[in-house]
Length: 168
Picture: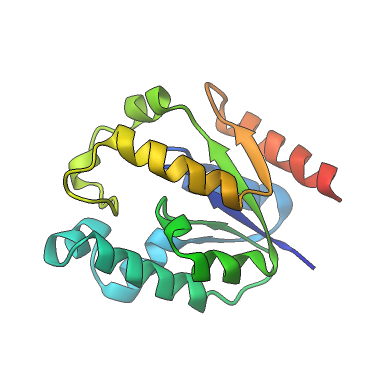
């Protein structure tokens, strides 16, 4: 039975914010994989990037994703979780994967700390290029896609719940 809900999407899409609200609305637990990484490593995502590189951060992320063993939870993933086929396959076994689809312009309005946010990307990669590259991966893994453009967190959560109910 797929009783977990995985949220995927770009940094700034609202995975953590909407995930917590969704967990409260559905009476589920809540995990944020970025927080799990930081606790596991004892460093912020940006400190990990500063001390190593984006590929090391992605390896750490994959290790954390594969280690998740929970039921009846909402899991907000880092934006780069979709680079790990093994991590996504592990999560998909007992989860419905929800892509929070947010337009590039909206993300740019929300994210003002691209260079210091700890985003796992090549140092020369622009946010627009990252968006294009990741969008294909998000669509590939998603069971449900939610349009988040100009919607409040409450509206997004309502859309997610509606989408989950339609899959039953």
